[in-house]
Image (tube, rainbow, N blue to C red):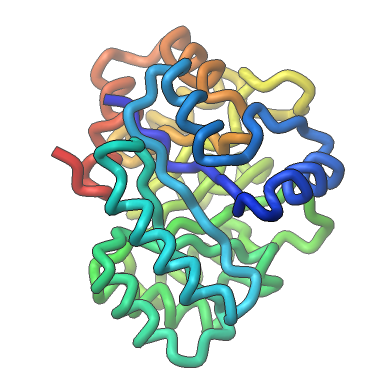
Length: 274
């Protein structure tokens, strides 16, 4: 089974505008049209069984709608192969109630994006959210490292993550982009071996036109230093090709057991698939 734990789609009303804006900001061309149907076609081509959608709340007023729609996505997952995390914004005052609703919806986690939410990850508001989510058994996927479409400062560096881990003692944290996009030396120094997951999204050199990505040698070294049991397959579709990612993972010098864990065995426990 292959599970892509890091994908995005956009509302039908704004999808063309949203994709065009993000292409312009990042200099990266989308590999699907940004819709659910486009993602499903990509999954079929790549041989991916499930994709996890990661909605980002850029304002408090979006949160309730995001979570209700995530629950609807999960209700249809047996037909579509699409799953979804929920979302929350650091300015959400009733964050405990919102996270309890996420749990009641049956969602398995939430997505945080410190850059889009303009909040450093070691901020007390995030720490409170992480602590409560962990108490409820919810996973927390966070954009880590630089964002190709955003200016400085970087709002989630390995040092911020260490502060969150020390204060919350969470074991539910998933750091996107192999622990911190383009901060991989610091990731290897400070985070490898910690009780966190890394996902592989938008991080490896199967992507044309994006510089300074992890080479096969760097990727395998980081996987083995951190532990293949804590690596999750993700692509960041539509911002990278699911098929190219699958082909790259099948080509590189991982062991069969490492590949099996990364492709789906680790993620199955998180999204609770049999």
